[in-house]
Length: 390
Image (cartoon, rainbow, N blue to C red):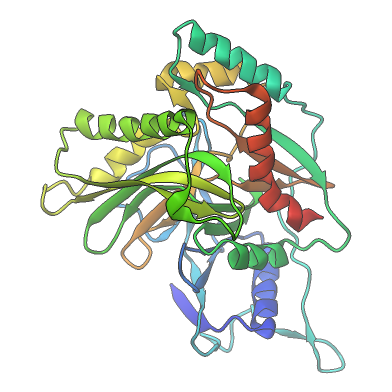
């Protein structure tokens, strides 16, 4: 696994484009990401092609990037780390002067930066059900005592503005969302997806500390807001409490009692705010090295993207949403990279189609929900990506 360190100047950003173009021309795949609260961007090339995975065993997986769909019984996709390039504050240099991704030259001796031929899925005529009507059906099911919470979602196809470039959009998301996991992936198996998600699902650092968090409740954010004085409604507090309860119940199922809990607190995610509670477990102290894999299977899909009780909520959404979420509200992230694994729920994302981008968003519905307000919440969430599309 070769690595190149790079500084993200304009020229080096063009180099990223060239590296990706050469990889895609030869049938490969790639993942490009930047973790929350860091400046380093990582480009991972998968020259050997992605692999389908039915079960995830984080402890034995070689370094790479993992992508999973919303439905837990569907195949996951693993991007092996054949080549890795880092873009941070260090000097940029080529790992091997003979490598095929070197900057191409035209006849005049200037650099030529090709437009990458991304894996684009064809546009479909799929139309989701009316979102307000779906929320009303969800409310009726909650009133009948079938659920505590349902998280219906919707999609919207937005035509590309003239000159839209997904790599430029990736860099813009990095600038606008410093607290998010920003990612761009492209492969035959998955298509091409771009997103900036605020929600951590499973994290294991090199000190064997396991982390996850409960994220729910949504309010608009502006720079004038004082986070210490934000008031949350009973509906939002209860929604976040349900997600926290879900995580704690997962710990109880495997008899893990030695965890720390911090929150809830108000956090910023682009143009919105959420309530967040952090959980941490020292896997060495409890002698549970497989905790990451076990919790990943228990947590996904979380009540924050599906509902409670889980199995009934999942069946309800499969029957009533009227479309396939695909990778939206699944999870993705680097695995065993730098001796750490960080997987995030794939929210605030879009899929690149032929003539438009498909944007996804959902909202948590409880007994206090209002259909129009839940629709407006999905609009707020999509706005982070719509601004990139014009």
